Length: 236
Image 1: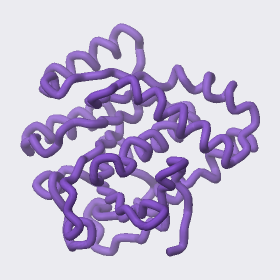
Image 2: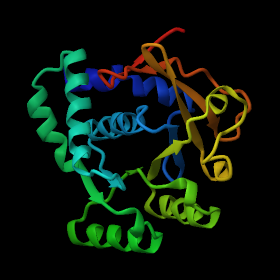
Image 3: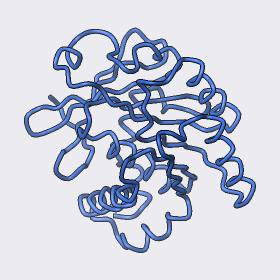
């Protein structure tokens, strides 16, 4: 399969269709789940899709072990390439690397002013202007609304979409209950799209919790394979 065909047939197209064409620049989106359920894999899928289309992605990592981020990208790409039998996969992976920049922060350095200054210095020094920003591992449970509002304003100023990961406490009721569970419940108004990852026997279901102001949410019909980390269509 050629790169163009992979982009056209990517399950990310299904996600975009379900959320009215995609998250869109100036907006915030989030994947929320228990720890270890697949949030980073989903973020990597989104980022790789953008990179394959020639768009720049800035990945801001607050992970305890930041070395794993590179591994996530390579593993997800290799699984996608093998599944779709992508031609010249190694060459394509190397080709898209300049479209991604990873910056690591510690949780104690999560002050938005510090983050913004670092990003601006990189933009000015390298000319790397991201169209998508990935924020992975930032503790949203400790974030006030005013702090998230700064991220929203940053997305609008940069004309970029920003995807977050949000870690939930292990509560079975929160997975099946109505509404948006913590830690996003108090911040939900600032997010345009929120997707919940629900562990099921043999796969992880992707459930749309918010799509802007829509009261009629589409069923995503997407699942994540916890072994291969692949997102695919399903008809459960």
